[in-house]
Image 1: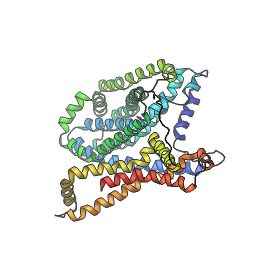
Image 2 (image 1 turned 90 degrees about the horizontal axis):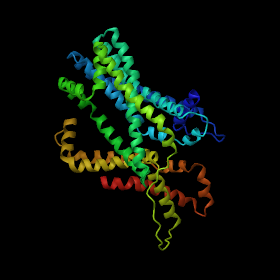
Image 3 (image 1 turned 90 degrees about the vertical axis):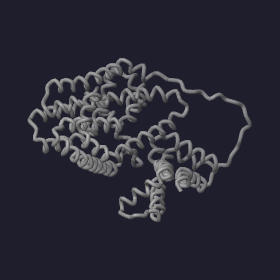
Image 4 (image 1 turned 120 degrees about the vertical axis):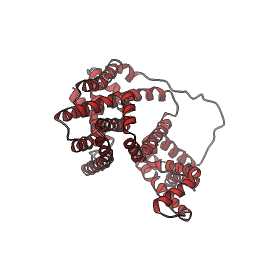
Length: 417
């Protein structure tokens, strides 16, 4: 039964990636192959880019006899990458999965259901971990020429560190579920949270080189801070670099015990979590005069409601507008500093004349990133016949969808300009 549920859970996760189907309802094989090749390409690019950053860090830290710190930082980056990749997936795949009540009505133990979902999430974590840990292991083996104990402990860390990430993901997913279930606009708040989370991730990633330079310059001080504040990663680095058996035992305890506790709590309370219907804020009806509007206005409000009510749609199609607002705020407060930065980068004394064209190109590029018209037509899906059945001209339907794109893209562009 566990094998069957695990297969179904992986199928549910991959189904969200391969939505394209033919008219008979079968998945398009060509689309699946195309997406698989795309994922392989992204994995290779990420692995190589992370390898370049880790190589620059490893050269300095290993030479300074801080190889354990290099391994600890690699483990921290791997856990952070896993957390970022699955933090929003835990809530929908564990706590608020659509088949929770269906599975509980079958002769299946809740512990088996929870185990299948945790193992599916753990499989994704191993994929994310490999992007960081594989180049880190190769780099350290080349630079330090370690003993055979390194390979054993490194493999142990590769298996255990994703458990730490999964533990944090399950805890945060539960907290988010409790908080958002009692809110009226939880989908809008989810969209805002997703955007803010990604902006923080982009900021950290864009400054990764600067952080790496600081790590190289202040390796000893940062190593002492890691030893005090991040004991799981210190234990991993110390055990892998020196073969310390006690540090390896600490690594096992730090990763396995919290995960086992969270898994046990989930198995014990899964039935209550899956069947509880938490109330949300109710809307008090007030009698008032009925207002009417045109078909165009109703369609525009419908498009806006769908956009802000679908977090994935809003995030993927409207992120360019968010970046336009960020660009506007940055140039408003950092205008002189931006001119100096561009001048230093290009070796030109005065960049004032080129600043406006450069920013105009950036605004145009971000406007091109904000595209909601085509996705909005695709999202109609099986409900497209409802629009066709209404006495509304086709051009009115399309113009409402175009208006949404203008609102989401043009308004931030005007603010940026």
